[in-house]
Amino acid sequence: MRYDFHMNDARTAPVIIGIAGGSGSGKTTVVRRLTASLGDAKVSVLEHDRYYRDRSDLRLEERAALNYDHPDSLETDLLVQHVKTLRSGEPIQAPQYDFARHNRLDTFDTVQPRTAIIVEGILIFADAPLRALMDVKVFVDADDDTRFIRRLQRDITERGRTVQSVIDQYLGSVKPMHLEFVEPSKRYADIIVPRGGHNDVAIEMLLTLARGLVARG
Ligand SMILES: Nc1ncnc2c1ncn2[C@@H]1O[C@H](COP(=O)(O)OP(=O)(O)O)[C@@H](O)[C@H]1O
Ligand SMILES: O=c1ccn([C@@H]2O[C@H](COP(=O)(O)O)[C@@H](O)[C@H]2O)c(=O)[nH]1
Image 1 (cartoon, rainbow, N blue to C red):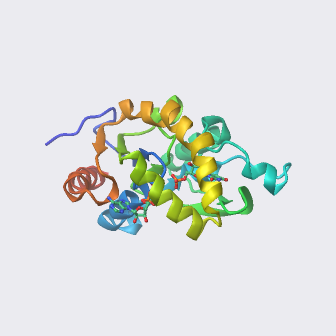
Image 2: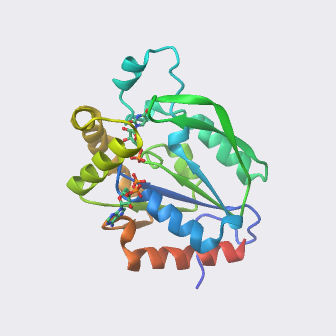
C-alpha cells in the first residue's frame, strides 16, 4: 500500500506525526505506545507543553490563575521553528516546564533529529503553520467526564493541585477552551482514536501505519 499524504516519495526528511486531543484523553499513552513500537532510537518527541510562555514576571498565585488552555499561552512559533530545525537534521534545545510552579525552568533537553518526530499537545492542530508541518495527524478522543476524572487524579498526584483548584480551573478555562479550540481542531485529524489511549484496535492500525512510514525513511 502507498501512503501519499503531502510528502515527497524520495523521503529523506523525518516523518512528523501530530498527536492531539483534550487534556486527559490519552495522548501520552498513545505516544508511549508509538515510541515503544518504533523504537527509541527512531523517535523524538516534542511536547507542546514545554512551550508554555515564561511568566517569571508574575507571582505563583498570579500564574496559577492564568488561562493555560488558550493558544496564546504557548510559544508555538518557537515550536514550529524547532520542528523545522529537527526536520533539517539538526538537534534542538527544548525548554523544560514545571507544572507545579506554572513556569519555564531555565534548563533544556537536547532533542535529536530522528526518523520520526512526534509532536504532542492539546492545541497542536489549532495552529495552521504547525499543522502544515505534520505528515500524519492523530486526534485521541475520550468522553469529557472520563478526561476530567483522569485529570483530577493526575493533577493531584503529579502536579501538586487540590481538588477545588482542579475543579475551578476545569470550569473556568479548561472546559470552555476545549470547546472553543481543541474539539473544533479534530476536523483536521487524519485518524481519530476513540476511547483514549487503550483502544488496541485503533492504536494497532496507527502503529502499522507509522512503522510503514518509518521503514521508508
Ligand atoms: N482508555 C483508557 N482507559 C483507562 N485509562 C486510560 C486510558 N487512556 C489513558 N488512560 C490513563 O489516563 C491517564 C491520562 O492519560 P494520558 O495519556 O496521560 O493523557 P493526556 O496525555 O492526553 O493528558 C493516564 O493515567 C493513563 O494511564
Ligand atoms: O502551568 C500550567 C500549564 C498547563 N496546565 C494545564 O495542562 C494541560 C495540558 O496538559 P495535558 O497533559 O494535555 O493534560 C492544559 O489543559 C492546562 O490547563 C496547567 O494547569 N498549568
